[in-house]
Image: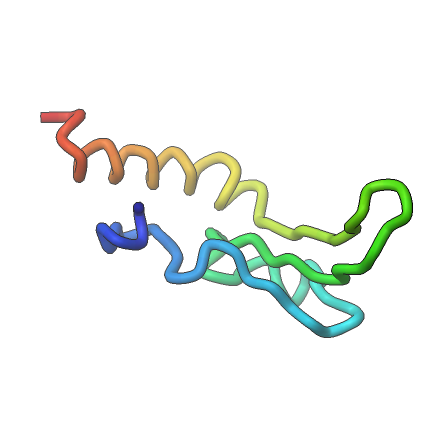
Length: 82
């Protein structure tokens, strides 16, 4: 929904899937989508959990400050702050 509403801090692609064997890596992928996208990679079969993968996101931008700002933008756009 944030992407459909074109909110200022909403990343165009909230989840980015990589196919490289050595990705995601913090120094290359932490700022994907201005820090608001999660990067998924190293997807492989697992006998215990069916699928294994690595996810990287910027904890400060996406997890704390950025998420709070995006939530406020969404509340404003949907009329909760009027």
